[in-house]
Image (cartoon, rainbow, N blue to C red):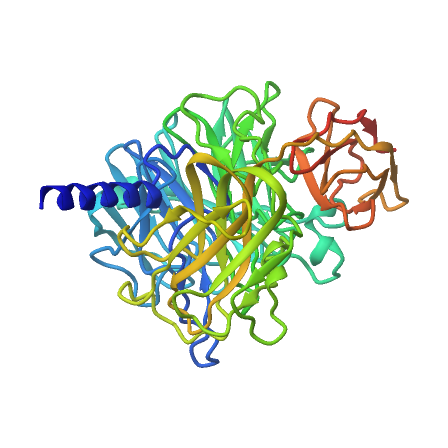
Length: 584
């Protein structure tokens, strides 16, 4: 009996290690939370999970994440593990783009609205205890808002402010709040900034800024750094790959504000996860800045989205930037204040791009190979959603696997409520060198049940394998659908050579530039890096090697000088950066 008990205890410990890595040091966008099912399209029977307009607040050295239409919020102590909290009170209509702010021992919370609504507060948000702080913030004129609000406390001035706006007609607004009157308006509101797409190329609407629709500005946020006020905003529209954050800078909380010449500050139009607009900026416990944003999925609905966060900083010239280079690859969570903008990147490369796949079954033309195409809008669907359905990725040679990400899709789903008893994901991963003998490398069936539409798994130890197998145990959807299984680690070959013959030329419409290069022989993709100075190449546009070796960059500002360089990457690493060239 003792021997049997010892075996059972050992097995329990083994599976616990497989399911959880208590020493996890990395994260990978999109943020691995239980995105909630949306009820807005219930009448149209369109079911999907979504998360958008994120605000992460550091409150008493712990983190709180607020997301549009989620019925509650998330709490984390490390920015990796997020627990969902159902609060004691919540608006019946839910919250869109909520504003949150931590001041001393109190967390303040306010929803987007065109009506009178209360400001809520909590001194115990980890317990979900919310109370009324202000029963009715006074109503503003029709269509003025405050929609997409942001709360700001200027500690130096001991003054409170609100910023808001979500429109392609109205500007971003701002107003001072009166703390003595429970944060009602202390001043009349004023328009602060407008979009100017005729001069700011990145503010043009549409995919790659190619639509003539008047663009939208939204998602205001204020950050004070080195005595300057950085009023941030999202543009030009959430439903495209170019959704980004920009900033204006002022010497006072209500301006006047000047357009930052290096805009946009957070921009991710290429790669697996596209779009970085409408989020917030916060500091972690080590003083590092982060910028959050709203990537675009749009399988079932145009506003089906996710949450991302990117390392952010201010350089010696007080220039604000968010680092989206390899922004959907694994990154380390810092254990100190970082000094080099790329030092959080793990160097774990994508091993699975366009690798062949086999599956236990396939529904219609939704074939297995779609899970390695780095496109969240294409997907594999199995014949059933039952336990035992599987999919295998052939890496085509033995590679060192360090992390995995499985991204589920709501294909013809019938769920509109994230009921925890039904809505959870369980799965296993195996590794093999011969496609016959399999080693179990991950199993979450012994964890507490939770939903993980974009589950990221950092392995406790690297595994050398040619084949990786995903096995389904449970999904809540009526169809097992997976958009991408992403496998990260390091190959055993050489990194690609630096691309040659980089050519950059500005068009007559100086918001645009044509960039071309010669392809490397063993690459899978390229990062085009650009910025306003040779040592300020803060922006990245990622393209895959099977696309044309050219890019029309349409995000430039009229009258602003720019510089550009390129690097290639593959399974084994990243090339040396090319010579930096001015875009003339």
